[in-house]
Image (cartoon, rainbow, N blue to C red; front, side, top):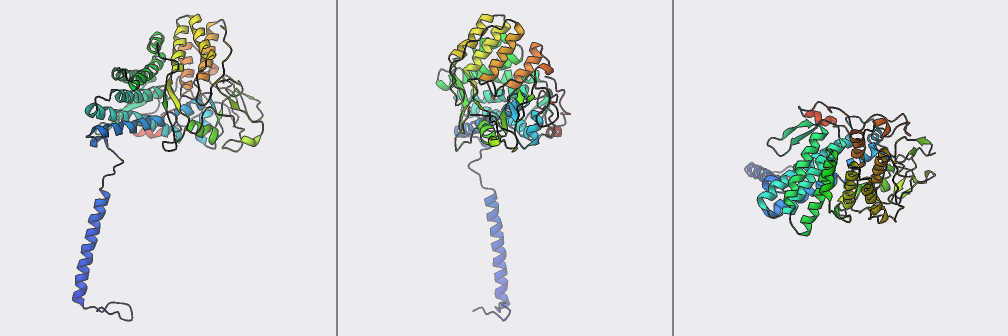
Length: 464
């Protein structure tokens, strides 16, 4: 029997103590080995691309790519929102300087919100490429899913070209080691996007419902790229026959996450629907801005408070909100309205005013549902009579049909590049309601973190 002395120490013979020490050492070694085993255990929820050896694993990688794709549309604070903030769709009612400086068109290169948005766009490309490689090797019959991966990749490339400055780097995150991106002009990025979307179309040639959905989605995205590259006739041809009722959507749920356009706008009130007059007293004129809030347009219902009862996140701004989206509302990544608007612009460019006006009035006569809103029929438009006024009317109509779906900033840049407008008569101008004046930014900068890339020395230029 082991006895304890008055100090609580064991009086067991020493030879037994030596055996205990050895046992203790063996126990420590066993624990270390067990810990190593725990640390090395495979997480069944994570599938590395290099470990994709089954058809099921390839599909899982593709599903992960789709989740990342959702993050650059409505599942996260994306350039759909920040592009609209830099343009005229939204105004800031946030406490965050990142939002304020974007709305003021004076964006700093180290803007942390844009850093996250840029990373997610890059990740869509990387993860789509990983999924394409896995699917082609292990599920070559999943042609519609492969097409969707090309859609995700091409869409991200199109959004980069539409929203960011010239000189945006595009690398290869799947190379070993990863290859640093080489800066590309916006037009070079649009060409890259066109190639991705064209590749997708070669897979989206089946007659099943998913293949048809992907074919239409790719054609709409590809036509948007064609517009950006100045191929108006080609854009119109691409979307011919796409039904107006068609929509490719990203969806949301309690498990998959909520609609961030709703979350940032209506729920958190960090974004206020943009208008041509600002300030709580509604006395600060914003030149060039479409009066999204005060237009009382059927496509965009807006609640505009006249007191501080609905203050923004900043506690000061009387926030203008819209019920266009709910917590779990799906967002249209591409739809038939996009197709009709592309056809209308192609007709306008070709000088076919009758067709251009007819397309717009057909949409106004039977408006499709927009988010949670089913607009009532609207009065027919009349020809304003001049080319310049027709262009203005076309892009105004498009702005309401596509509100906060990631198109407005790119369209404003196109108005300058392709239609002879100037920055001064296109982007918001004048006194900003949070102080100072609007700056000169017309796109988002590639952020400071990218300067770790030895090929990147900053935006080539900040031109439209």
